[in-house]
Length: 199
Image 1 (spheres, rainbow, N blue to C red):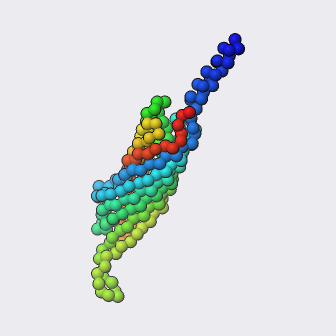
Image 2: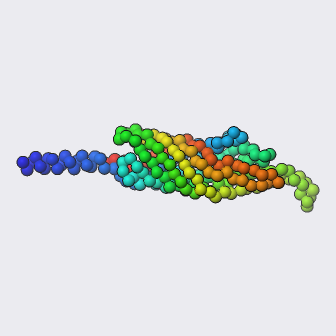
Image 3: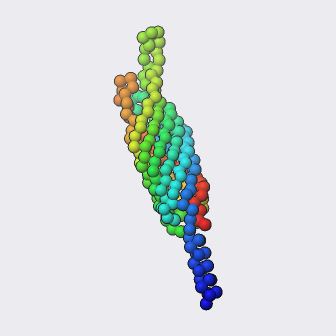
């Protein structure tokens, strides 16, 4: 009887240990961002993201995503052109993982703060000092609340995801022209979770 009880408790302990998981993990990802606008002719772009996460269960993570996206675009609005954009975001995120296997789909969302910088080229103007023509160039910065939706697959420690980042447009006036620059973008990301494996 004693051996039976010892064996039973050992089996229960091993079973519980197999179901435990490490709560802390850090995801590091790289990807490609795409501005979602019919007038944008994106030629180049890259993003980098770091996201520490805490697992409240084997299915739900709460995290903090720090992301920087760098775009080179040929967006034109009302005769004003842009050649680059820089997007920095700080978001609280939540992710839900489905299933219990090694390959698991997931859905997630986030909300936080965006800092956006863009460079615009306005009309040619005549300089009063020299009488020469010069193009008006301005750098504009926007700080706004942003949201994010994501879906993807986690295979072991590797993660692949598609994310939609929504942010308010940057609106301003340059050489007497009212301009609106889109700041929402779609991204395709691959990354790796350091930590967080099941024990």
